[in-house]
Structure formats: structure tokens, C-alpha cells
Length: 590
Image 1 (tube, rainbow, N blue to C red):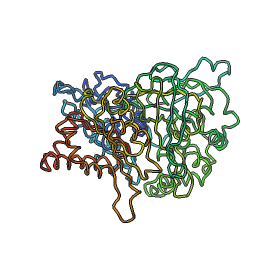
Image 2 (image 1 turned 45 degrees about the vertical axis):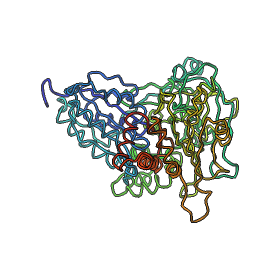
Image 3 (image 1 turned 90 degrees about the horizontal axis):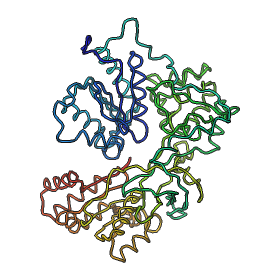
Image 4 (image 1 turned 90 degrees about the vertical axis):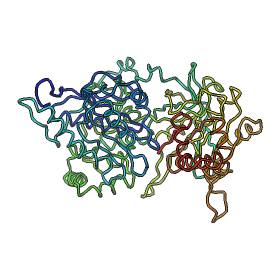
């Protein structure tokens, strides 16, 4: 394979599937490392990739919820799962997979494992053992990525030796920037638009409601948002809304002053993408300003990864700061970096305040600072009940770090700052589940906390079409403080279109075990079996992917044993059958 027609071509394809952006960052880093050995990479999201006759593909795949693939992977994955595909379909394909996950969850790196197995079953050859990055490692994802990428480069060099007269670029060299930025006269700005302005997935919206639905004295702020659209929009229960947040003006102003950009932050600039193997924010226009970039396109509030400090090292001039960064980047200093950065959740803008000697060339801002990514929220309304409207149910992210510093989630903070009348673009994306086509069969919805959002959409849709065999299991801490949409559920129960069951985990007396949704499902075991077994109903689960989804499935197994007379093994098979038939659908997040 090292010579002649079998040699690896000088170009390969890198695919990524991500929810939070980590896998995209890994894909960019793989491409940069391939460039060191004179290979050019084409980097694509799996969502935007059309399968062609590639012979060499590298993939970076994240894990979502309780072992599910990211939305961007679903379409391609379903294509690969077709039963009519020949076993030698990919006999000419060489591939490698790097998975991203967290060993705190049962199905660690599950999508990456399934993908590599499926490709092998279709005749592909794995050129490098699968890498599995673990967020629990003291180095984070880098704990597995760095040894994996070294092994991958060795394998690629065996397949394709360096061309004559070339050499491997040193790992510590400053890479070329991915963009070239030049000044632009103000008069030219009108001709540049954000890509999402012409993207048919996005629609112009006006906020009409921003209302807190938890008690004013409750520790958690959960909001009900409503948006009105100027055009007809189409969405189904289970779909998600895509929101592009903006950083606060105060944070951006302070950051620009810290890094020395304040004086020319409002000058118009043109951005030329010069490194096609390195990605840029998908909604970035060709012209904007530095203030605009750090408000809308780059994330100054992210907790930086180790690769951030590696690149920052090239730009600091103070000797003590250089020594500190060298210490952080050494293997021995990994714990120090964790204590400095990850453990206290120190943000990029706070880090830059401590490394004030850094002089960052403007062309490198997209290499150093991560993209400000859109956030996805399950739609909490039915399009049939609310034409030209979308409702969201959102928990405002706010907490204090170990240093007692208050933190707010950038997107939820952005949404809470909006007032009725505010205008923005909102995207609509297919969700992880769809409402059963068999509307005659009953449904059971399990949605504790803000997991109730897609359940509200499902129940509204079912009521609108005249189907009343609906059951909702809702969970919260207090009936009086955080029982979202309680009056709606009571109204639906009164008219016979909903059976509503709620668990209030903190309302019980001291010393009594707390009650969760899985506990009341067990209490209703006979009825639950009747709905899912003889009546052929469907089960929808949404919420945090901690113990809840596993607990709910165990409760369903109990119902199959108690109501259906099944053995433990048969009950487990019944739950597996529900999943195979698409009658048990999860949308859970970590």
C-alpha cells in the first residue's frame, strides 16, 4: 500500500457529528495534524455530507444523551443501516474513528463504536484503532486524542510516505491562520449578509412573551417564551428551535479593552477564508467588525481547552506568563491546568485578563477563540394549535463556581434580556423523534422538568386532532414552585383528554424516600402495561440523561412483569422491542 496505484491520495475527507462543537474542534485539529504530513483534508459536518466514492475518511463523533448519535449524524446513520446494502459496499474504503464521550454514562462513545463496527461489516478497513476521548480523564478529551492522533499519523505515513523533498512540520510550529482580515470602507457593508439570512431553515421572528413560570422565590428561573413569525412556518412535535445568542455588551466591551482591540473594534473588516481545512462559524458574514465578531461569532465566555493555551503560548511576551503556560502544557502540569481552568470554570475572557502580555494578531482570532455556537431548544408548542408561532420552555442557566463567582449561560441569558417586540432569526430543525403515525394508539409522555417542552407539543397536537388517550408523567421538586404548565394539565385532565400524573420529589416529609417519575410509573404498572402492551401504545421520554431514562425503562420492565406476566428476560426483550419498533423514543441531554 505504500507505493504505486495503491498509495493514499494527497487529499482525504474528515467528517464530524457534534452537538456542542467539541467534535468539530477535534475534526479541525485532525486536519491541522494531517497538514503536518503534507495531506490536505476536506472537513464536512455529517449533516451536510453527501456520500461519494471517497477512499479515505476520518470521523470525529460525539455522544449525546444516553448514548444517542448527534442529530447531524442521524440521516447518514440511517442510510448506513439499510438492510439492502451489500457486504462489500465499502471494500475500497479506509477509515478511522475518534469518539467523544463521558464514562460517567453507561453507553460511552456508543455512536463511534456502532459506526466503526458498521463500516467494517460493509467491507471497510480500519487503518487505526478507534480512539475514545473521555471527559472524565484528567486531561479531558486530549487524554485520548493526543496518543490517538500520533498513532493515526504513523499509520497514514505507512500508507502514504512523504513526497520527495518534503518533511514533517514540527508539532510546536505556529500554524498559518485560517483567515486573512483586511479593512473595509463603511460604504461596502450593506452588500454583506449573514448566511442564515438566506437560509430557508431560518425565519424572522418577534418575541411576544418572556414570562417566568417558576415561583419568584424559587431557586431556578424557568421561562416560557413565545415568538411570532412574519411568514408561515412548518414544524412537528419533537422539532427544535435554533437560537444564535449574543454576548452582553458589557462583557464584550471589557474583553476588547483587555486584548487591546477597543480602539478599532468598530472598523469594518473583510474576512477571507484562507485555510479551507479549518472551519469558521457557519453564520459568519464576509464583512463585519471586531465588536460584531466577539458579540455574535466567537465565544469569549467558554471554558478554554488545552489547545487554546498551546496556541496562546505563541503570543505572550512576558517570561513569567510563558513559564506558566509551559507548565500548564506539560504532562506534569495537567492537574495544575485542571485546577486553574476546568474546575473553577474559568472563562476565556478571565484567562486573557491574567495573560495581559498576549498580543494576538487579528488574523488568528478564529484559530484561538472558539465559535459561539447556536443552541437548540425543544419546541413546546404545536404548529397546528399555534400557526406562525413557536413556544419554548427554557431553564435559565445560572450558578456559582467554586470561587463563588456567578455564572449565567450565554444563550439563556441572551433570551432573558430580550423583551416583547425584540426581533431575531430562529431556525427550525428536525428533532430526534416524531409523533407516531398511528394516532389511534395511546401515548405515554415522560417529561420531568423542562423535558416537558416536547411533551406539551405532542399533547397539544393530539388534542387538536381529537385523540384523547394521552398520559403525561411529569416530575419536579415542588408542586407549588416549579410545576410547569400545571393549569393546562389540570384543564386537559378535566375535559378527559389527558391522564396527568406528577411526582414532587421534595414535597414529602423528611426521612421518606423521594418520589420520581419512575416511581409513579411503577405504581401505575397495570395501566402502563395495558397501554403499551395490548393497546400498542408509544412511550416518549425527554429530560436529563442522568438516572431518569434508565429508571423509566426499568419501570416499564416492571410493568411488563406485573401486568403482562413476563419473566425478567422477557420484560427486557419487550422494552428492546419497543425501541426497535420506534414505540420508545428518547430525547435526553447531559
